[in-house]
Image (cartoon, rainbow, N blue to C red; front, side, top):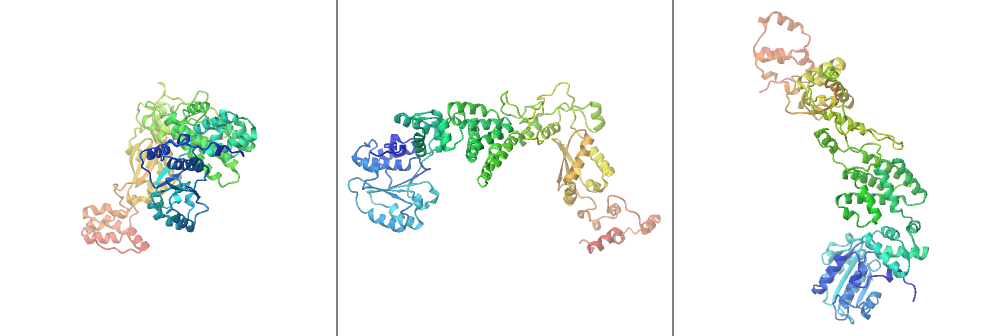
Length: 628
C-alpha cells in the first residue's frame, strides 16, 4: 500500500474522533437520537477544522446499516465507501469547479431518483460560496423542498459570500479554531503511534504555527519527520518553518514592560539577522499582549493554551502593567502591523514600534491625572499593578504627587492673594506629571527617578485659595504695564472660578474675537506665566464664552442708546473704556450747563454728532434709525 500522509491517515472516523468541535458533535448526535433531521446543513469554519470530516461522519451515521445511528461501525463496507468518497449515494461536489447554473440544473434532475442502496441520497458541496448567483437561485426551490430521501450538506470558509436566501434554508454550524493545547496533545499522540520522539515544546510550536487548523498541524509534523527523522525538537520547528520561538516573544515583551529599549532593539536585530519573518514576530507579540490582557481578567482562560513554563511567565508579566497601559501598547503595535503589511523595510517599522511601545507604556493617562488631582498625596494614589523589584524603569508609569518645597515667607511674598491650607496643591501634581511626560532619549540608559510617594511632616504647604476679584484686578494691571496691546481684550473678560489648578476666564457672547485672540498659544502662555507669578504656583487658564455675562458698553448689544432715559444717557455716551478727548462743542456745553437741551431730540442730536458715531457711520456705511 502506498504511503498515506498523517492528515489522511488520522482523519476522524467517528463522532468521538472529532476534536475541538464539541458543540457541533453534540447537536448532530442529539438530532440523530431524537430523529430531528433537517434537510440541509451548512458547516462554516476556517481551513483544517473538520468541516469535510464532520460531513462524512454525519453521512455515515445517516446511511449506516440500521441507521440513522450514532454508534455505527466505521469499518462497515458502506461507511468505508463514504469515507473514501466512492459511495453512489453520497456525492461530494467541488463548488469551485462546478459553480455554473448548468451543473445545478443537472443536480436538480438527479435528486428525483432514489438512493441505490442506502436510506438517504446525500449531496455534499464543498466551498459552496464559489457558486454563481444564478446557480444559487436555481438551487433555491429544490433546497427548500427536496424529496424526503435527499439531504444537502454545504461547507464553506466564507459564509458572507453565500446568499441569505440559501443560509435561511439551512441549519448553520460554525466550527471553531481548534485550541493549541488540543492540537499539541493530538500531535504527541500521533508521534507516539508512529514511533517519533516529539518534544512537547516542539508540539506547541507546531500547533501555534498551524493557527487552529488540525490538518495544517498534521502536515507540518509529516514534513518535520521527513526533515529530522524520528527526533524532533523545538529548534527544528523554528528552523524549518521560520517561526519565532515563544521564548523570544516572551523575552521581547519582558523588555518592553521593563522599558528596556536597547534590549528590545537588539532582540529585533537578532531576529532579523536570523532570517525570521518580522511580520510574524510582531503578530506573535500582539497576541502575547492580548494573552496578558486576558490573564488580568481571567488567569485560567489566559493560560489554557500555553506551555506550563510560559504560563508562569505570563502570570508574572500581567502584574507589571495596568490594563490601560497594555491597551495603549496593543493599539500602537496594531498600527505598526498595518504599516508593515505595505512596506519593504519591515525592520525599520518594527524598531520604531518597539520604541513607541515603551513610550506608550510609560505615558500617564488622563484618568490617572484626574485621580491624583482629586485625592492629592493624602488620598489614595492611582491604582497600578506593582512591578517586580528587579524592574528598572526609565520613567514612572504612574503620576506621583510632587513635594513642593517653598519657604513660607517667599510664598507669602509672591502670592499675597493666597491663604494657607493643609494639603499639597493639585497643580504641583500636574507639574510632576508634565515632568514625567517630557521626552527622553530612547536608547540611552536612564536612572530610575527618585520620587517620594507620601508627604513628610516637614513638607511646607502652598495654598490654592484665590481672591478672584483681587486676582483679576492685579492681572489686568500687570498686563497693562507689560503688554498693553492685549489689555483691551482682557478687560472684557471675567474670572469665573479656580479648580484643579485651572483658572476659568469667561467672555460675553459678543466678545468671541477677544477670547480667540487671547487663546492663541503665545498669548495664553504669557497670561498663565503672569497668573502663576501672582498666585505663587503654576496655574493654567481656560478661556470660555459664557452667554450669561453682560456685554460691555462698546459691544453691539450695548447700543440701546435711543431707548435710554435722559438720566442714564450721559454715562452711555462714552463709547470706550477710556475717556475720549473732549471736542470744542462738548467743552462749550460743559462751561454752560444751562445750554444743554435735555429733551429727547437733544440727546439724539448729541449722539448723532458724536465724533466716534460719525466715524463709524462713514467707515461702515451705516444708517441710524430710531427704534419703534
